[in-house]
Length: 82
Image 1 (spheres, rainbow, N blue to C red):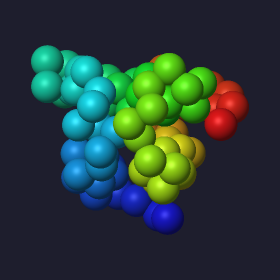
Image 2 (tube, rainbow, N blue to C red):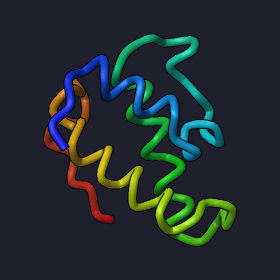
Image 3 (cartoon, rainbow, N blue to C red):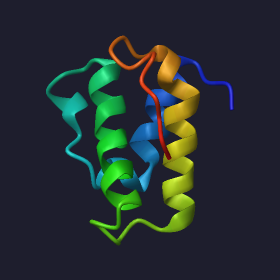
Image 4 (tube, rainbow, N blue to C red):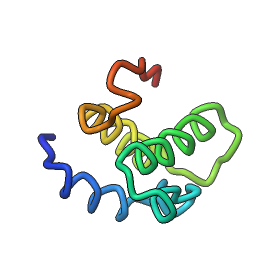
């Protein structure tokens, strides 16, 4: 999906993985903080460390990470291995 940064932020805030994340963007309003919060939940859910994220929610978050990586500063070249 093609996102604007604003739509990407709204989408992230509506996802279950965001609800279960540390929501670092509340203290640090950068897009990188939001992206990292989503990434962290995807990483632990993919590894089976947490099991309350449904497959469709996980896939939605992975897709979001890939589609919005271009908005990050620190993670533009980060390899997403999910």
